[in-house]
Amino acid sequence: MINQTILENSHRKLMPKLFACIHDEQIQKVKEYIKIYTQHPFAGTETGAILEEAASSAGKMLRPRLLLMAGAFGKHNGDTQERLYKLAAIVEIAHSASLIHDDIIDNASFRRGNPSIQSKYGKSAAIYAGDFLMSRISSHVMREGLTHAGSILFQAVAEMCAGEIGQARCLYKETVTLDEYLHNIGGKTVALFRACCRMGAVESGCSEDLADRLEAFGECLGYMFQIRDDLLDFTPSRTLIGKNTHQDVREGIYTLPILLTLENPAGRQALSPYLKRNREGDLSDNDMQQIYAILTAYDGILGAWEYIHNYQKQADSILNSLPPADVLPQLKSLIRKLGTA
Image (cartoon, rainbow, N blue to C red; front, side, top):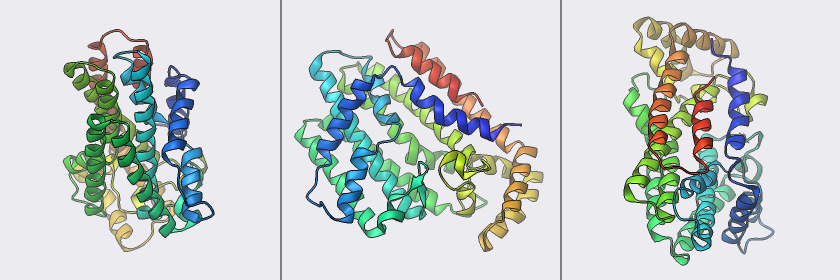
């Protein structure tokens, strides 16, 4: 049986450690550009407070770090590196804006263990802030001459929106297919991972073939990250993960462990009464324990790990095809750790 507590603790700790090859000075440069790009005239307002928080409380900075690591396969001159810092800042702002909007849609109370923006400042101010951040992205992409990379980013943002819309159309549906699920997470999560790798490669002057391979690696990494995150919804305590547990299930978002269980006729028979009850009202904590027992018994949890391992094999194959780079050992270690419970 997969130990969910171990899973969460490793998930929270491994990502920053495995991006350690991106030095603090580099991340500080990215943060400086985030502050510049999020400047605003709304001091003293709730929207202004949100923008200040977005500029100063960056999380693990995974996507900027991934972009910089992809950029390490290209040129290493000062001008190129500075453009990568700017682009990494823009990516983090886009991610922050998406989280603000996600929390509004989900009516989420927590984000990264803290009260969410919309729960602290209200939905209207959160919407204004998220929209303002997206407008700043467009403005600075043009001002900095990052149009090629910007077009990649904006395509990813469109895919993120499509993924969220697709997920909303699947709420509480027991007939959601695996293809629909993969398509939805391919938009809402994987698209930005994929785009970060391509943007870093393109902006640093990598060949088209190398950019394609790095983009494919980002796709595998994104799927591994999201499926692993979906498994965290079955973690027993919110204090472990900084968000409400079992929230996806209760909101009718049926992720890979549930969908794989539903593919088994006996598993569907065991699980369907709980999903019907979920449509009609809130599931109890005991219900969630029973659901987890069913997912375990009918290999929904184990099957989700098999998907992770399949993406891990693809990612390993891609990394083995890449040219030498200082960041390559960390990327290999990252994939290995993500594939470990």
